[in-house]
Length: 230
Ligand SMILES: C[S@@+](CC[C@H](N)C(=O)[O-])C[C@H]1O[C@@H](n2cnc3c(N)ncnc32)[C@H](O)[C@@H]1O
Image 1 (tube, rainbow, N blue to C red):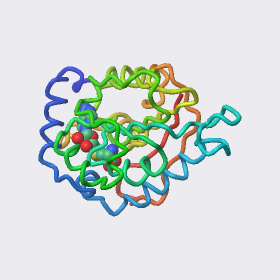
Image 2: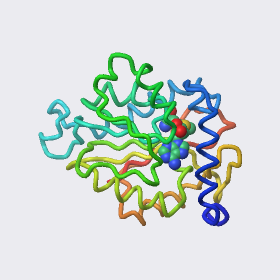
Image 3: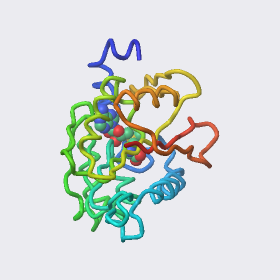
Image 4: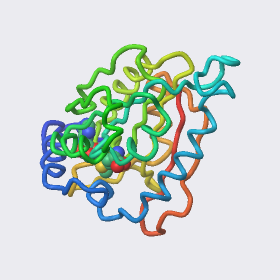
């Protein structure tokens, strides 16, 4: 990531400053594209359902191949947009981790009754966060990998792998550039091309078990791909 890695401290502190000023709303989470939230969540549901359970009520114990539905981790969760519509309806417990405390505070009311099934609200940068070993069936990482340096992303993915339960799955859903690494000075992030993301995933010792492009998003935004890893 060149320049970014050279000035890692400001890369992270500028991003934190950017997000502190963003309103704790769905529109804020999606950079003014709140209108795509439904399409996004519906696409994610279809994707995730391919892996959950195996006709045994989602415990993942039937044939031993399905992903369980006990506990999920929402990474870079923001106000819990994904937890509310995707993860809490499917998993018994959901933990949220985000670097912006104000978003986690908002999540407590935004998630309404279901907030009772939130296990933990962790306020931390993913570059520092160590998920509990063996706790999670699914670790969902959406629209946040561009806030990590290459080395931190690889290390974080390694820690995520150790945090999975048997048959657990890590999902990355994010913008992919057409070519190379595209920096965003405004929110202090980068957008990587898909081959670079695939390479970082393999450096973390993970295997891509399924990959899809999210369809029906506006043409002017980056293409978005979902990768299932274990
Ligand atoms: C584009 S929003 C996406 C929020 C959520 N994933 C969603 O799709 O609704 C990016 C989120 O990442 C968080 N974030 C930025 N840098 C982070 C970091 N280094 N570690 C953890 N969270 C971070 C921001 O606070 C913000 O909530």
